[in-house]
Length: 140
Image (tube, rainbow, N blue to C red; front, side):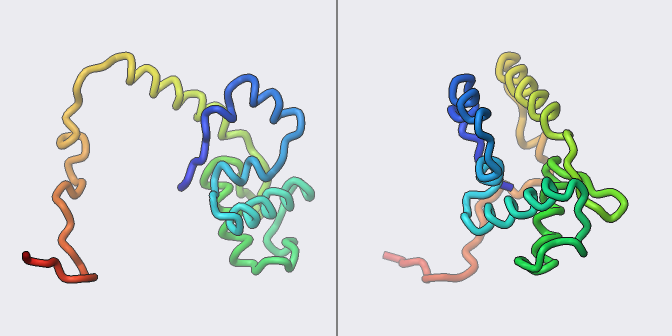
């Protein structure tokens, strides 16, 4: 998942300007750099906003149902939407966890101390991957 949170956009002064005219484009751009993906996600959020509760059968025919479902489910995954009783609607599971995460990161940075990453990520692949194709290595 891409979280395109450029810190300067959310500092106090730029945020105060942005919040005067909020746009779904800014929300979609946080999650997607690709213009098409951002458009589809913005479409899904706009449909939910327009109808309050949105069922897949009520989605406009502009996009295939599978695409609507993929982007609405992504909204659920990141905490902007909830999916209950076969309908999608907005929820506020996003603000508190992000604030808590920033406090957690700050505390980790201030506490210091070395951590053994080999122990923390015991099952991660740590060795360099073998070449699986492409040009053969030159032996000069």
